[in-house]
Image (cartoon, rainbow, N blue to C red; front, side, top):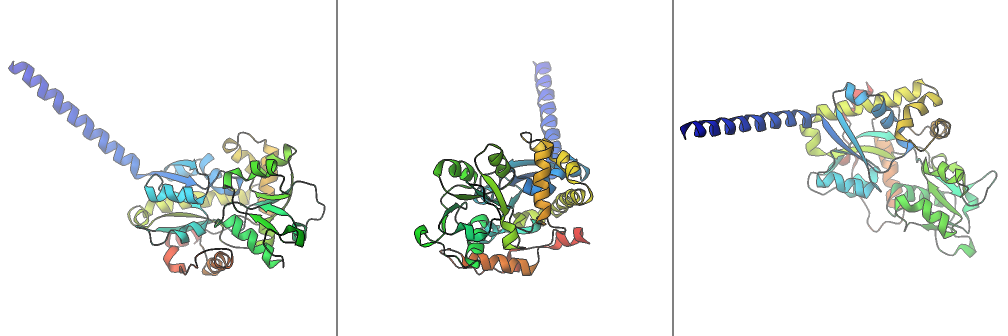
Length: 337
């Protein structure tokens, strides 16, 4: 009986040691594990995928997983609920989330122009914004940066947003979920929509529309997509956040230093449904409008323009969030040196 008891104690001791060792290993793995949630999966975020596919995160000792959402609001929900460590979202979502417990903070900028393209049902030579008069265009979710930027450029061009298309008003639809814009355009009969790559090119290749021009060509520079995290993550894991942003910055440098076909090949494993030639075209489109930031630092000037767009479009609330409340450039400044 004593022998059995001793064996039992020995087995229990072994189990305790095993659990303790697993917990120790698990803690070590979690320390450098980063769960990224992206607003959608798009070539618009090419520096991120280049960094991922070429092993730049591993070079920094990070284990990064990427999950795609169906809009900035879904990504922010993932961050605030604790199922994501970092999110790639429109900066407006960070503005809307201020006042929550452990409020999100922008610590790096990825894109500096609107990355959507105006797509038409019919082929239009020499397209201008005036071609939108008296038509309906699907612009995405109300309150999202794509829809607000589109509304901004339409009004800046001297047109009126409204449903009276017969009098020349532009009917800007904001009732469609971000990931459903393409299918709604195909089935609804609307004359125009805005889509990101690769969805825009895929829709054209399927014979369902024509890619006309980039919204970013009309809107100019503004902070469009950023990396955000909770303040607590920056406080507790600033080293990991710096490594993450450095790897993405290396992804941008790779794009800047190589031709579009080489970049397309580096992206191919992230877009298995597209050929290298299709990817190359999309890369060239984004290079042509200078979509990607050469520095991850968000300027106060660009933040001010974003707030102007947010508060000048159809919002029920006026937002008075300040630059210092939502932007922390301390890590971005280190990388940009």
